[in-house]
Length: 235
Image (cartoon, rainbow, N blue to C red):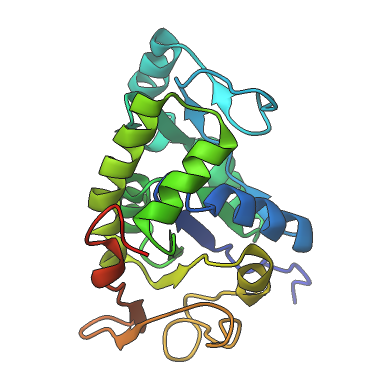
Protein backbone atom coordinates (compact mmCIF):
# COMPACT_ATOMS: atom_id res chain seq x y z
CA UNK A 1 0.00 0.00 0.00
CA UNK A 2 1.40 3.37 -0.90
CA UNK A 3 1.93 5.96 1.85
CA UNK A 4 2.16 8.79 -0.61
CA UNK A 5 -0.13 11.74 0.03
CA UNK A 6 -1.64 13.78 -2.75
CA UNK A 7 -2.25 17.35 -1.55
CA UNK A 8 -5.57 19.00 -2.21
CA UNK A 9 -5.59 21.22 -5.24
CA UNK A 10 -5.27 24.89 -4.45
CA UNK A 11 -7.90 27.59 -4.95
CA UNK A 12 -7.59 30.69 -7.13
CA UNK A 13 -8.91 33.58 -5.01
CA UNK A 14 -9.40 36.43 -7.49
CA UNK A 15 -9.95 39.97 -6.19
CA UNK A 16 -11.01 42.80 -8.50
CA UNK A 17 -12.23 46.36 -8.10
CA UNK A 18 -12.10 49.79 -9.69
CA UNK A 19 -8.82 51.59 -9.11
CA UNK A 20 -8.97 53.20 -5.67
CA UNK A 21 -11.58 50.91 -4.13
CA UNK A 22 -8.99 49.37 -1.83
CA UNK A 23 -8.38 45.90 -3.23
CA UNK A 24 -4.58 46.11 -3.03
CA UNK A 25 -4.63 47.20 0.62
CA UNK A 26 -7.16 44.48 1.43
CA UNK A 27 -5.04 41.88 -0.38
CA UNK A 28 -1.95 42.93 1.56
CA UNK A 29 -3.83 42.53 4.83
CA UNK A 30 -5.14 39.16 3.70
CA UNK A 31 -1.60 38.03 2.88
CA UNK A 32 -0.36 39.21 6.28
CA UNK A 33 -3.16 37.39 8.10
CA UNK A 34 -2.91 34.14 6.12
CA UNK A 35 0.68 33.03 5.65
CA UNK A 36 -0.30 30.03 3.52
CA UNK A 37 -1.61 32.24 0.70
CA UNK A 38 0.58 32.74 -2.37
CA UNK A 39 0.30 36.09 -4.12
CA UNK A 40 0.24 35.98 -7.90
CA UNK A 41 2.58 38.80 -8.95
CA UNK A 42 1.48 40.13 -12.33
CA UNK A 43 3.72 41.31 -15.12
CA UNK A 44 2.98 44.85 -16.27
CA UNK A 45 4.17 47.51 -18.66
CA UNK A 46 3.05 50.24 -16.22
CA UNK A 47 5.84 52.43 -14.82
CA UNK A 48 6.89 51.62 -11.28
CA UNK A 49 5.40 53.87 -8.58
CA UNK A 50 7.17 55.25 -5.49
CA UNK A 51 7.42 52.56 -2.83
CA UNK A 52 6.86 49.65 -5.20
CA UNK A 53 9.42 46.86 -5.56
CA UNK A 54 10.01 44.93 -8.77
CA UNK A 55 9.14 41.27 -8.20
CA UNK A 56 7.11 42.00 -5.07
CA UNK A 57 4.36 44.32 -6.31
CA UNK A 58 4.70 43.56 -10.05
CA UNK A 59 7.17 42.21 -12.55
CA UNK A 60 7.86 45.42 -14.44
CA UNK A 61 8.67 44.84 -18.11
CA UNK A 62 8.77 46.98 -21.24
CA UNK A 63 6.46 46.44 -24.19
CA UNK A 64 8.96 44.23 -26.00
CA UNK A 65 9.29 42.00 -22.93
CA UNK A 66 5.53 41.72 -22.62
CA UNK A 67 5.27 40.81 -26.29
CA UNK A 68 7.74 37.97 -25.66
CA UNK A 69 5.63 36.64 -22.78
CA UNK A 70 2.60 36.56 -25.06
CA UNK A 71 4.52 34.87 -27.89
CA UNK A 72 5.86 32.21 -25.50
CA UNK A 73 2.34 31.53 -24.10
CA UNK A 74 3.76 32.35 -20.68
CA UNK A 75 0.65 34.27 -19.56
CA UNK A 76 -2.49 32.67 -18.18
CA UNK A 77 -4.33 35.90 -19.08
CA UNK A 78 -3.53 39.46 -19.97
CA UNK A 79 -5.42 42.70 -20.55
CA UNK A 80 -4.92 46.36 -21.38
CA UNK A 81 -5.95 48.49 -18.40
CA UNK A 82 -5.74 52.31 -18.37
CA UNK A 83 -3.30 52.19 -21.28
CA UNK A 84 -0.90 49.62 -19.80
CA UNK A 85 -0.81 45.85 -20.10
CA UNK A 86 -1.04 43.42 -17.18
CA UNK A 87 -0.70 39.64 -17.25
CA UNK A 88 -0.60 36.57 -14.99
CA UNK A 89 2.47 34.32 -15.23
CA UNK A 90 1.25 30.81 -15.97
CA UNK A 91 4.17 28.81 -14.52
CA UNK A 92 4.00 30.22 -10.98
CA UNK A 93 0.24 29.68 -10.74
CA UNK A 94 0.36 26.10 -12.04
CA UNK A 95 3.17 25.23 -9.62
CA UNK A 96 1.32 26.62 -6.60
CA UNK A 97 -1.92 24.83 -7.47
CA UNK A 98 -0.05 21.58 -7.92
CA UNK A 99 1.35 21.88 -4.41
CA UNK A 100 -2.09 22.53 -2.95
CA UNK A 101 -1.45 26.22 -2.27
CA UNK A 102 -4.17 28.86 -2.55
CA UNK A 103 -3.24 31.68 -4.92
CA UNK A 104 -4.41 35.27 -4.44
CA UNK A 105 -4.92 37.49 -7.50
CA UNK A 106 -5.14 41.29 -7.43
CA UNK A 107 -6.34 41.85 -11.01
CA UNK A 108 -8.96 43.63 -13.10
CA UNK A 109 -12.35 42.21 -14.08
CA UNK A 110 -11.13 41.17 -17.54
CA UNK A 111 -8.37 39.04 -16.05
CA UNK A 112 -10.81 37.60 -13.52
CA UNK A 113 -13.16 36.58 -16.32
CA UNK A 114 -10.36 34.96 -18.34
CA UNK A 115 -8.97 32.96 -15.42
CA UNK A 116 -12.42 31.82 -14.31
CA UNK A 117 -13.24 30.68 -17.84
CA UNK A 118 -10.03 28.65 -18.04
CA UNK A 119 -10.18 27.31 -14.47
CA UNK A 120 -13.88 27.29 -13.52
CA UNK A 121 -13.48 24.67 -10.79
CA UNK A 122 -10.50 26.40 -9.16
CA UNK A 123 -11.59 30.04 -9.18
CA UNK A 124 -13.43 32.07 -6.54
CA UNK A 125 -14.05 35.67 -7.62
CA UNK A 126 -14.50 38.65 -5.28
CA UNK A 127 -15.39 42.19 -6.37
CA UNK A 128 -14.72 45.17 -4.09
CA UNK A 129 -16.95 48.24 -4.42
CA UNK A 130 -16.25 51.72 -3.07
CA UNK A 131 -19.08 53.33 -1.08
CA UNK A 132 -19.63 55.80 -3.94
CA UNK A 133 -17.88 57.32 -6.94
CA UNK A 134 -17.37 60.50 -4.93
CA UNK A 135 -15.47 58.51 -2.31
CA UNK A 136 -13.55 56.71 -5.03
CA UNK A 137 -12.37 60.04 -6.45
CA UNK A 138 -11.40 61.26 -2.97
CA UNK A 139 -9.24 58.16 -2.40
CA UNK A 140 -7.53 58.56 -5.78
CA UNK A 141 -6.76 62.22 -5.04
CA UNK A 142 -5.52 61.42 -1.53
CA UNK A 143 -3.02 58.79 -2.63
CA UNK A 144 -1.32 61.42 -4.88
CA UNK A 145 -0.09 58.95 -7.50
CA UNK A 146 -1.88 60.22 -10.60
CA UNK A 147 -2.54 63.47 -12.45
CA UNK A 148 -6.02 65.03 -12.42
CA UNK A 149 -6.58 63.80 -15.97
CA UNK A 150 -5.67 60.22 -15.03
CA UNK A 151 -7.91 60.38 -11.95
CA UNK A 152 -10.86 61.47 -14.08
CA UNK A 153 -10.15 58.63 -16.51
CA UNK A 154 -10.06 56.12 -13.66
CA UNK A 155 -13.36 57.38 -12.25
CA UNK A 156 -14.96 57.22 -15.70
CA UNK A 157 -13.61 53.69 -16.24
CA UNK A 158 -14.91 52.66 -12.81
CA UNK A 159 -18.48 52.92 -14.04
CA UNK A 160 -17.86 50.25 -16.67
CA UNK A 161 -15.87 48.10 -14.22
CA UNK A 162 -18.65 48.21 -11.63
CA UNK A 163 -21.12 47.07 -14.30
CA UNK A 164 -19.34 43.69 -14.33
CA UNK A 165 -19.65 43.01 -10.60
CA UNK A 166 -22.56 40.64 -11.22
CA UNK A 167 -20.12 38.17 -12.79
CA UNK A 168 -18.42 37.62 -9.42
CA UNK A 169 -19.12 35.07 -6.70
CA UNK A 170 -18.87 37.66 -3.91
CA UNK A 171 -19.32 41.43 -3.95
CA UNK A 172 -18.97 43.74 -0.98
CA UNK A 173 -18.51 47.42 -0.24
CA UNK A 174 -15.22 48.50 1.29
CA UNK A 175 -16.62 51.32 3.38
CA UNK A 176 -14.42 50.74 6.42
CA UNK A 177 -11.02 49.05 5.98
CA UNK A 178 -10.57 47.62 9.48
CA UNK A 179 -14.18 46.40 9.60
CA UNK A 180 -14.16 44.89 6.11
CA UNK A 181 -10.87 43.00 6.29
CA UNK A 182 -11.76 40.46 9.04
CA UNK A 183 -14.81 39.38 7.03
CA UNK A 184 -12.69 37.74 4.34
CA UNK A 185 -13.02 33.95 4.34
CA UNK A 186 -10.38 32.00 6.22
CA UNK A 187 -10.87 29.16 3.75
CA UNK A 188 -12.74 29.05 0.47
CA UNK A 189 -13.34 25.71 -1.19
CA UNK A 190 -15.07 25.65 -4.59
CA UNK A 191 -16.34 22.12 -3.99
CA UNK A 192 -17.83 22.89 -0.59
CA UNK A 193 -21.48 22.21 0.12
CA UNK A 194 -23.70 24.79 -1.59
CA UNK A 195 -20.85 25.64 -3.92
CA UNK A 196 -19.01 28.29 -1.90
CA UNK A 197 -18.02 28.54 1.73
CA UNK A 198 -20.02 31.42 3.22
CA UNK A 199 -19.32 31.27 6.96
CA UNK A 200 -16.39 33.67 6.57
CA UNK A 201 -18.65 36.48 5.28
CA UNK A 202 -20.77 37.72 8.20
CA UNK A 203 -23.49 40.11 7.10
CA UNK A 204 -22.47 42.64 9.77
CA UNK A 205 -19.04 43.29 8.28
CA UNK A 206 -19.84 44.86 4.91
CA UNK A 207 -22.83 45.70 2.77
CA UNK A 208 -23.64 42.67 0.61
CA UNK A 209 -26.39 41.59 -1.77
CA UNK A 210 -26.89 37.84 -2.23
CA UNK A 211 -28.65 35.93 -4.97
CA UNK A 212 -28.77 32.20 -5.60
CA UNK A 213 -27.20 31.30 -8.95
CA UNK A 214 -29.33 29.17 -11.24
CA UNK A 215 -27.93 26.37 -13.37
CA UNK A 216 -24.50 26.48 -11.78
CA UNK A 217 -22.86 24.67 -8.85
CA UNK A 218 -21.21 27.96 -7.89
CA UNK A 219 -23.95 28.83 -5.47
CA UNK A 220 -23.62 32.47 -4.57
CA UNK A 221 -23.60 35.47 -6.85
CA UNK A 222 -23.92 38.78 -5.03
CA UNK A 223 -25.84 41.54 -6.72
CA UNK A 224 -24.28 45.00 -6.60
CA UNK A 225 -26.53 48.06 -6.12
CA UNK A 226 -27.30 50.52 -8.89
CA UNK A 227 -28.18 53.76 -7.12
CA UNK A 228 -24.91 54.58 -5.27
CA UNK A 229 -23.03 54.69 -8.57
CA UNK A 230 -25.46 56.64 -10.73
CA UNK A 231 -23.42 59.85 -10.64
CA UNK A 232 -20.05 61.13 -9.51
CA UNK A 233 -21.68 63.14 -6.80
CA UNK A 234 -23.54 60.27 -5.14
CA UNK A 235 -22.92 59.69 -1.49
